[in-house]
Length: 168
Image (cartoon, rainbow, N blue to C red):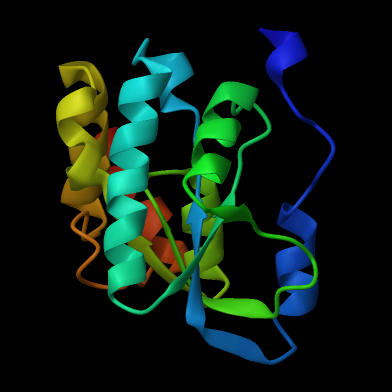
């Protein structure tokens, strides 16, 4: 629903500019994606699962911020704000770590030498099998950890290898 989308902030271009400044080693930014919209998952279910995961990061000592997707709903943002999570803003020094599920933006951050982790498996049971198969095809060709245990290290030629192996 378009009226429920906040297009007021952009983050993508600021990361590269800020990457030359000092990093903030105790902060982590969760890259949100509105999968609940794309796969008809209830906002309540998605919010509770997200809050649960981000709380585990806080218990490990991280200051957790959220980078909302432009399509994230106001209801989801409101729920996360009520749980005490703030949106990342320009005043935050470049975070040392980024975490999300599985997105182009995570790939871009990894290619630009940021510490990137995926927590996809924590949310996996909420997705349809077709999407899980899609993720599996990519991770069979580009070794990516989906348990947030190992940093993604992606090289540009990984995508060429993916294309070659997928379309042979």
